[in-house]
Image (cartoon, rainbow, N blue to C red; front, side):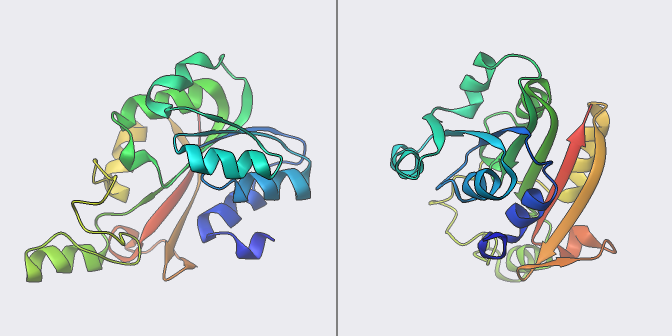
Length: 197
């Protein structure tokens, strides 16, 4: 099943220790949670804002509650989970800096993935067309997007450094495949970081 997951989710699934306690924030339809539960015996919980997605998860037998990560993570105790996961959601948070603090308060480690707004296609759309881009990684028009913070890989590295957060590992993706680290701020459509404090 891992081969049917989005590339960043497949990498996360490969790097979660069996039997761990996991909180998947913005878990969507629960694909990653189902993989972790079925293949690795993980105690996976989910937090999702979209009621229809919560209903799908619950129908699959997954433990998911409806909630808003911007406010509801405060209800979770310190270090309640081995891992917290925030995939393709950081840029939609009201305050990504505070969200990062909460992820690492609630979990011992965190996986965070996000679209890289410095990707060359995004830069080209702005420079040559003068318009907000619609790309594989950013598939909707500016007025439809939930993205309120346009983060780049360089921006994210600076944020974690300023907060004293340790980057355990990082992965970068383009065209649905993992790519090597040279010039990733220009080449990567999205990034994934494993973090700890």
